[in-house]
Structure formats: C-alpha cells, structure tokens
Length: 94
Image (cartoon, rainbow, N blue to C red; front, side, top):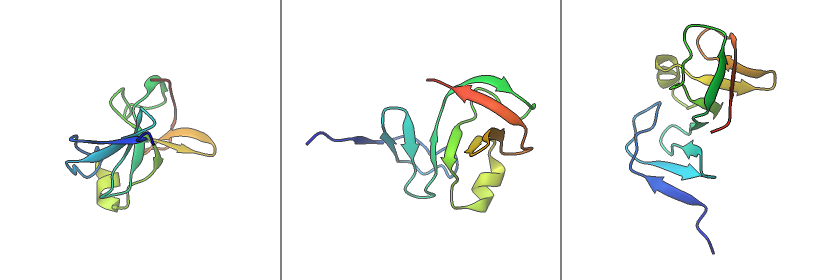
C-alpha cells in the first residue's frame, strides 16, 4: 500500500509545532492545533493584510490565540476572505 502522507520537519504556520503532516502534495495538517492549510498563488488581495506568504485555510486551528496572531486567507462557502478584515481575496493554483 502506498503511503499517502509524509511527516515533515517543518513548523506549523499557526502554533509552531515542529512536525506537520504533508498530504495530497500541497496540503498541510498540524496534529497539535488541527489546522489544515496550503500555500497558493495570490491573484487578488482586497486589503493590505494579505500577501503571498498568507496560507489558504480550510479548517481553522483550535487555539484562538494562534488564529488571531496570524493572517491567512479563509475559505468559506462564499469564497476566500482575509482572516483579519473579511475583505474578498483570490488565491488559486500552486
């Protein structure tokens, strides 16, 4: 059976845990805070907060302090928005 994930010696964007899980080639999961995120190409930023280093998050981390301390693009049913101000963003592709 082929292994579908890899444990990386890389810090989590949110809680700085030293090992995260890489799956489906471009996605990351942190077992400590349960964040699921990826880094995509930013096409449009509707505000000054978001830049190319901000990850796209499908599942927020558990810890509220970690979420508030970091800027990210949040995916919801209406599209992608800035985690700080709620302005629309557009990130796609790797």
